[in-house]
Amino acid sequence: MSEPARSESADAAVQAAVAGELRLLDPEVRRSPELVGALLHPDFHEFGASGRHWDRAATIDMLATETETETEPGAAPVSTSRMRGVQLSADVVHLTFDTQDNGLHVHRSSLWRRSDDGWLLYFHQGTPFTV
Image (tube, rainbow, N blue to C red; front, side):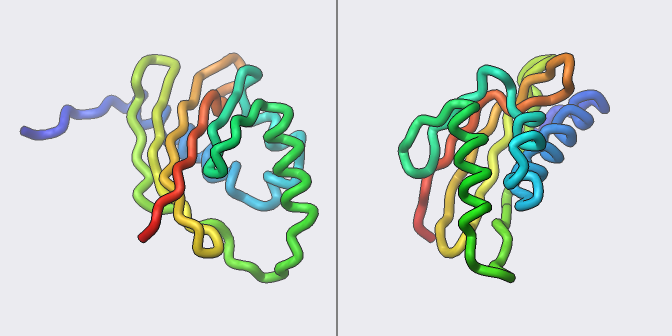
């Protein structure tokens, strides 16, 4: 059975969510509470790879602190693989992908919601796995 054809609007929605997700992995964005905040929905929450539940404010604070305390100049950036997306409704895109960061491998799932401010990350979950 073949996959159904995707519309141009669905492709654009998925591309917008992918672009937002990749921006959130950029160290320059991560260290800026303003830039991270501009990508997170007001009701954002996450179940992190640590098992901890994060809300929007805690996520913004943690990312700013995390990038301030990194001491490894020239450390390899987080790498992504197997990123796929599907538009679930006119205003929701679901992304799945894997990351690798300093030997930690994580399956990731994100829900992006369209808002008046564009596509914003509404929910994220990370689940560690071994290779």
